[in-house]
Image 1 (cartoon, chains in turn red, purple):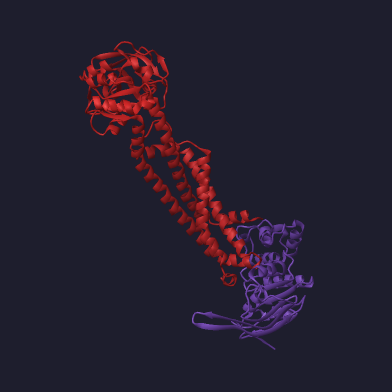
Image 2 (tube, rainbow over the protein chains, first blue to last red):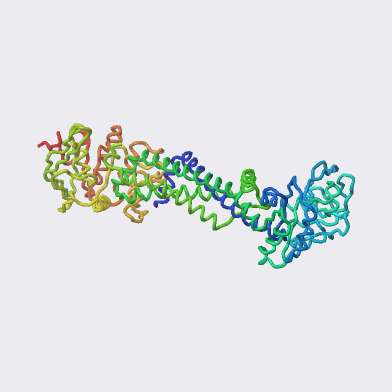
Length: 385
Length: 218
């Protein structure tokens, strides 16, 4: 017989009550773990995605530049275009290593009865703009070749050399991108001239991606560009990152607030449950005091019960959030303005330990009052019942 | 062994001042088997609690083995309860989820002493429940539960056993059995102080102390 066994026995005497209290705390810990893990995954995913773009800044049409940049990056269609002259002007700026046109739109794929996200680009710039790509096949050298993402290829069982039709034009699949874990897996990359013809915007661009020769001179290049080409908007990848981070921040704050409130409610639930148990066991506590238990012993018994409950709940919460990471992630994604592709919630041992420690702290705080109350029970009154 | 000199116990209940004990003088010798009788509200249980170091008198001096204990700090009273005193209650107060064996060894947990299995088994044999040591209180009759409570009170080898209405919830047969058990313990040298309403059982003890209105009646 030891204090832990006594605490376990006490918790098991009211299995349903203990289980409900445990579920409350476990759910809160699961939410906390998922949100913190999601946030960390979000930041890493965003960083990875922006790094993969291979450009330092974008020239985008008028409007909210950060929003436009993020839309372009993720294949959404923007209603505004910039002129081809801007591309020529950008290429003349000292320090610009590469200025590459981008046109993003949706095209009807009638064979598959769906809309494809099509990214028009200069195929000569593929290796510079997409240094991380691993291609099966070769970058097309004419305007009739396509590069397609792994997801589309896998979904439609498309092989190199197959044909895809958009409108009246047929395109040959020249290359398939190995899985990148990003939105690029669902894109079709088309020579920009071909795409401009299809959408009948021969000089229209959605954005221009710019790579500078010396990244430490980025500010000078963007200033020079802004001076020489008035009316354009420039957004650096760092700004896009910050902007997306700010957009997502409100959702993160909301999520964390929900987790903290859930924890507080659970803590009140734990306190209520343990307090009820103390009141119900008042005669028993009186008996224990009579047969030699000190006030501290009683305090320890109640605290151990609480800590045992919250620790088990913490472990259960981590287990649930790890097992149900996909469902939780899908749910959270609905509330975020933008989420990088790939898996956001990962099992991180240190984070799991931190969440269990947090749960333990909640137990300490929630159990403190009932334990103190129990230790103050007058044994004489308690024995009388 | 136990001396009470001018013990008074006063407390307030609502707006009413209660004088539970009004100057009790009493001595109980080592190895005595004493029954405390008296009508309800006469102060029997209050006196038992003071003698058992669960309560402290408002006035007067109480000594155990010659040492005054009436003004000792809580920590010392806990030590005395662990080392010298055993308690048996009318309501048994066994812990439901624990086995008979675990209930009996509960005081050892608070005394930070290891359970001597051989000794516990002998104690369980004495109360006739060794074969049921793994049973839980809900599998026992009232008489059996009270016998477990007696074994629990004995596990720390106390010098004195205080029993507050130990047969109050039992039928005649089980009451006799509990009394026989207490008598057997008394025969082994244990001092027993039993509060009871059962005059028949009280008559079978060595000595009867009658309380009325907080005073010992001669």
